[in-house]
Length: 145
Image (cartoon, rainbow, N blue to C red; front, top):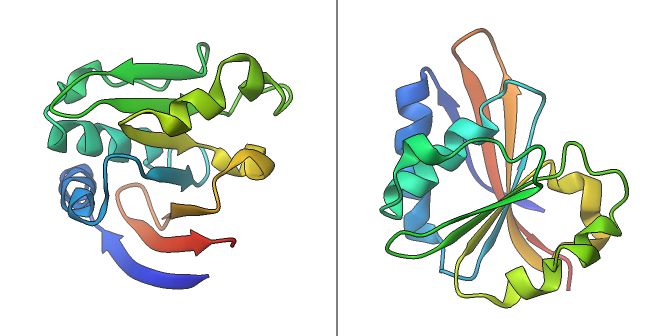
């Protein structure tokens, strides 16, 4: 794993802006895995990605009870939250492989809970809380080929 970018966000606005800028590195079929403790900024970052894709970012919420939400914008985004995933085999039931083949950005909160289902290449974004407002955000490209 090589770190592509390490940044300190000092506010929610900076985190949203960073997410929009990150889109320049992504293609429509990329998978983005977000990791970090509860409240670290994963869903906020997802809202920034949505905004950059022309999706109303205020409609983006953590899909904790449905596991996946689909958003249509200039390009679609599929937002997974695996926090309440009982067993990673549940991903097969909801059509995980189908989502990976669709034309759209796949964003996965708590993706480390389904490591065996992640594609060989994906972007990993780790959030670490420094204090109430500041977050360290580390972005890497994972390549398990």
